[in-house]
Image (cartoon, rainbow, N blue to C red; front, side, top):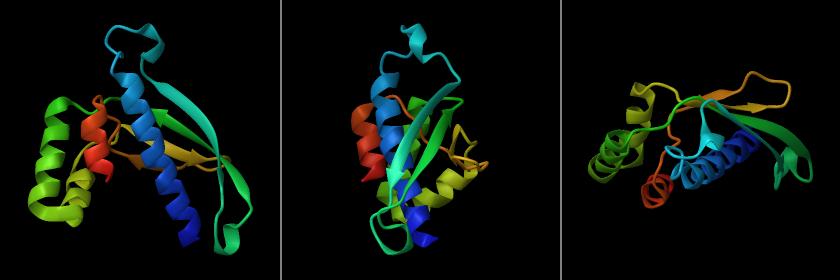
Length: 122
């Protein structure tokens, strides 16, 4: 179960990064009108999930503001990863990752700028 959760979290970060790249033109491109939905397939790499695949869907209902991204970066610099997790817990959810057949898990970080998202996820 831990491995599945880790794979799901990696998928969330990868999709957040992809959403960030696409969101750069979100203000002028009608293809990025919210809410957005993306589907994918993840493959297990170790333990009980090794060699297994499962589908998932990512729903994005809002974008993270530039000020929130700056605040997250400052929190990461000042308080480290644990502080960043606490800051994410205090913000509203802006999307959800849902394995096929399940409700899924909410998340708080689809952003708009490539370099900032990379800094937050590294």
